[in-house]
Amino acid sequence: MARELSAVLDHVARIGELDLEEVAPTSHVIDITGALRPDEPRPCLAREVVLAQAPATSADGFLVPSPQA
Amino acid sequence: MTDVLELSAAQAAEAIAAGSLSAGELFDFYRGRAAAEREAGGDGLNCFTWVAGAEESDGATGIGAKTPLGGVPLAVKDLFCTEGVPSQSGSRILEGYQPPYTATVVAQLSAAGTTLLAKTNQDEFAMGSSNENSAFGAVRNPWDRERVPGGSSGGSAAAVAAGLAPWALGTDTGGSIRQPAALCGIVGLKPTYGSVSRYGMIAFASSLDQAGPLTRDVRDAALMFRHMVGRDECDATSLQFPGEISLPSAERLDGVRLGVPEELSGEGIEAGVLDAFHAALAKAEELGAQISQVRLPHAPHALSAYYVIAPAEASSNLARFDGVRFGLRAEDATDLLDMYTRTRHDGFGAEVKRRIMLGTYALSSGYYDAYYARAQRVRTKIAQDFREAFTQVDVIVTPTAPTVAFKLGEKTSDPLSMYLNDFCTVPMSLAGIPAISIPCGLSAGLPVGLQLAGPAFSENRLLDAAHALERSLGFDGAPARV
Image (cartoon, rainbow over all chains, first blue to last red; front, side):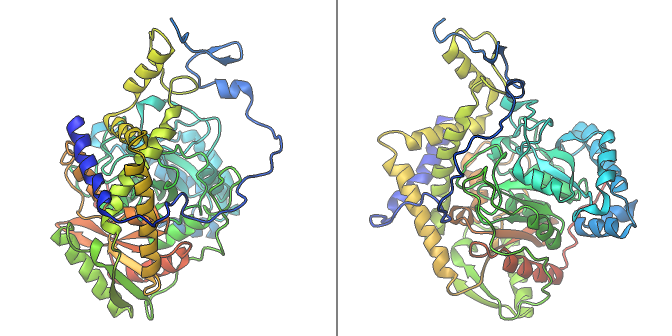
């Protein structure tokens, strides 16, 4: 995989050839203002629905192995 | 029932509205074909990851003629969340995952009257151009089973081309609708970024991902797209499409200015594809189009910028797959970190790991400016190139892909040669502009795609131009059907 990644990085490095000194970076392609919706509480998924796909649960939460076994 | 197979989705909806075909009958017809394809296993195309049960037919009958899409069945790419139906994004890490909600665009199409026929195979997390990166196996091209259908929406494209679904939903990040549409001889539209909600699409690269139709003809693409657009408050990057999507009717191209960018229509494109492309340009001229050369000087750098930006965003988006809330969890981990590490080791395929590593590298301290920040500046230059070109022409035309469908396994050992498939489609993705691929002929018996791109929100004009060309090119769009 190291060889494959090197080949891709060599190709990608071609953007280093361009003069981009005065160019602003693009963060978003379409102008959108006021994108956020009002911060109002609303109904959400029931806890048991959210937990239904979890690999392991305990009581009413996600169960994970201890950080320090 | 052969006549049902010959109907486009729009014609099927019209037949249902007129009472000459029932929605239940149509659903049963396609469900039977899709189920048989799935049961065929290795003898089939492997284009589905899930097919609706026979009991769903009753639901379709109820929809009937009351809705604009009349109950026409829809195949949906695996990465769209569909409540209670496996939505796995082609990945082992999400094997069997059944989301608690449905993606907005699928819900919109369902409200307009489509029924969920099947989920389609894809490259894992939409990373690939051949559909060979799926945890559920490669998809075969119905034109030649030893060849790839393209990717990442390869299952959707193969299903539509083989007449296993009337139409399908896909997503396009750098060409994942247009390139498989080209390789399978069908129509694929990547809409303007933001025109379709991404809510419920399992994310790959959020600043580029966009859902769109894969269909047998341009009219079907317009019909599906009409019911996909709209601002969704669950996706802050979505916005209201300015105006209605019309069904295309143009038969001529009088006064339409087509621009051919030399950067995307010469070097690196195989001869047979170029022949079909030039023949299509000649047809366009006969229809009244004015054809001129345009320049997109930064387009040759688009692929480099894309393979920084998309992996960078993917490395962040895919951090959520950690074995805690959904999907795979590795067994017998010694502690939490070990669980994360082994889950991701076992759950992700090689291409996904490759891109996560590329992305984290490009974003890492000390390399960020050289890679990610530069790539975002290249993106600005590419968008400027397009804006400049669109002061001179209405539509930019290129081949969709540099080659016809290639052999299974031909490019899997060389990721860079696989990435070069997206050479002609990635620039439009980086600029966020719409582009459509339509079949424009055959090379060595395999379909060639013609790409038409326009400024943001010019879909109506693009669809009209594509419609006129489609009629004139007379491509019948169907491989031998089983």
